[in-house]
Amino acid sequence: MISRHGRPVALCALGVVLALIAVGCGTKPVATVNGSKITESEFAKRLRAEAGSQVLTSMIENQIIKDAFTKAGLTITDEDVKSAIDERFGGMERFQQLATQSQIKTEDFIERALKPQLMLQKLATKDLKVTDADLQKWYTDNKLKYDVQEKVTLQQVIVNDQATADKVMAALKGGADFAGVVRQYSVDASTRENGGRVPDVPVASIPAEISKVLAGLKEGQYSQPINAGGAFLIVKLEKRTPGQTRTYEQVKSQVEKDFRASKLTREALMALRDQLRKDAKIQVVAPDFQSLNEEFKATAPGAAGAPGAPGAPAAPGAPAGPAGPPAAAPQTAPPAGAPAAPGQ
Image (cartoon, one colour):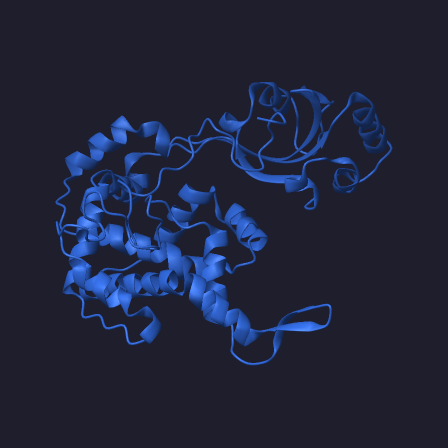
């Protein structure tokens, strides 16, 4: 499920979809306000009215893609899913954290949003002829992308002034548990509740003044306060994972995925989506969503005003993707939760 701008739907947006699918009907309350009940049936009716068309369109689109994907004899592997999660969220652990914050199940997001996008991309490149020479050149031109970067796992506590930083240092020198000190003093809400832990951060993505300090720490050691944009940061190095150069043979499968993705264009994905919609037999029977029948009938490659035609808006939740997988955050930019000067 992809936004009309070609990006994967946000986790929180998927939460609305799942709420509509999961909610039951009846008089059981979903909430009470001053003793008055908001019932499941009232909640479901409101969701259906406000988001039902978007959700149903998305479900139809996903089924169209799944049917075509199965017919083509293609498969989505666990490695495909892992690779996509790594690119979009910076790893499974970060993905799970975001899913928990958005109150949705990771398997729901994978099945309802991530896999349909991967299926559409594989369908669009299934007939692309790829030679080993093509892949060798791609690897050579993008070699740094396939090297394993040096990473660190650390804990951090961020405070607003030197006086509080001194209290933190005194507590740590007195034998206090680092995670406990984080929960007591840190102003960083994104890491405070998990003891300040920031997992698997590429060293190249950490601001220079912090990475320089980390370079001098051994595992288990913590730093002196670091002045980071007016706030003060104390970091403890939990683990250091050295970088590694990987050969073409080691990453060949990923190289092929990336090469194929590079050949995708938004226009090609839109044209494929439209063709799949045109070929599918779709009948919406719910009286309140009859307009969707006209929308799907109107879809034809190049049809004026059809969803996906130049200048026409994409249907809500329709799988319209960019050129290849959504770009991962640049390696020079710190991932969410990485040590960074406050306010950056």
